[in-house]
Length: 287
Image 1: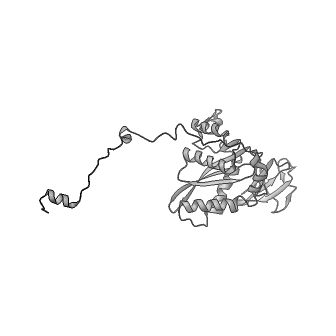
Image 2: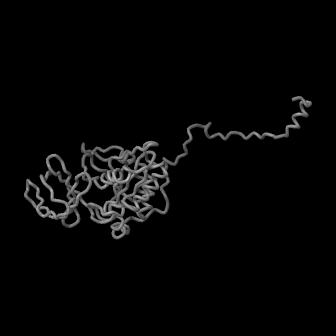
Image 3: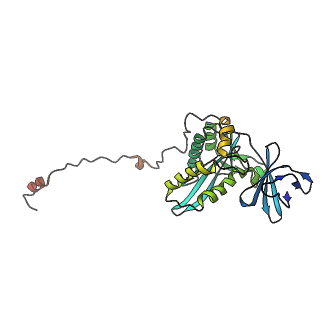
């Protein structure tokens, strides 16, 4: 659906219409990044996101999730002077509270450890986690061909331990993953660009400070509230309880030993130490 024009910034949209239907869409508007206009429809259940293109504004209706219902998860690649790093982002769907960590790789161990730390930071677990075709979670997605979604068995065991349901975005449906795609751009534009980092430790410390002082306390463009305030008021108590202990993997935590020789402990050979005078006596005083 394309809309040829959009309301001006700060105004209430009362006459925004679908051209083919002539239906007015009342609501309040706010402008976001990259020319994106967000309009909240009545009832707080739907958000109409207008992205500016050559032919006008293209509209996508996104459905807001209730508190505690869902979080979205994704990796984003960044390059620093000392190497490539992957940002793991977890965004709570209702409050937009953001958790972020920069990692060396984007494998299963990194994902599960990061999610557990995110759950601990939130003080609870969302009912469902939405992923964008992540290989550590989704083995194959045949839904477009009328088939099934095949999930990674190890990750299913991890999800069962923590009590959440893993879900996957349908391919080519951008409206299902917007809550985490926009924070990726936000991290890139508002945090990484324009800053200087010394190393991984400095990157981690600056990221933690930025989340606490900027990202989670600014007025969010869609909810029109600070994520931390919205989380503490409505969402924290809606999260599932934490597991009493971390997940113990049957696969990832196996000892990385590849041969019998690698397990053999080398013998300890005792060496007797003597003063140099003793050796001089044995050699008859010859140097």
